Length: 153
Image (tube, rainbow, N blue to C red):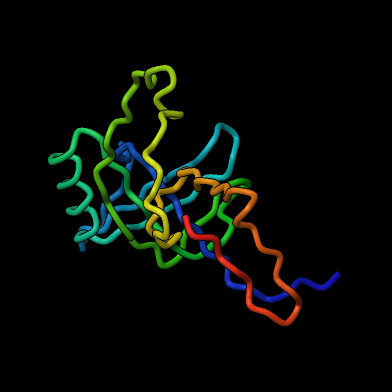
C-alpha cells in the first residue's frame, strides 16, 4: 500500500526542566526529552529566548507545563530522533487539582427548573425539562389541515 504524503509534526509536553543539555555560542540549548521508559526520545534545540521563557516560568510558578512543537526529524540512533524546527509554543502554570472527593450527591444535586418558555440555550447543562400535563378536556386532536392547538396553562 502506498502511503499518503504528509508532514509529520510532533507536540511534546513536559513538566520538568532538562538537567543535561549543551549550549552553543548563541545561547541555544540542546537537550533530550522522552516519554515512557523504552519509548522514543527526541533531541530538541531551543533558542536562547525560549530558554529564558522556560527559566522564568520555573521561577514564577511552583507547577508548570511547557509545550514544544516541531517536525519529525532524522533518525539519530534506534528510538532517538531529532526534532526539526523546534519551538517553545507555550509555557503555562499548572493549577493543582483538588484531592478531596466531592460530597455524596453533590453531582446529582437538584437544580431549579427553568421558566416555562425559556429558550433551550438558556438552560444549564443537566437541567431537566419540565413535562406539562394538560387536563384531558383541553386536549384537542387537530385535523391534518388545521394548525396544532396549544392548551392554555
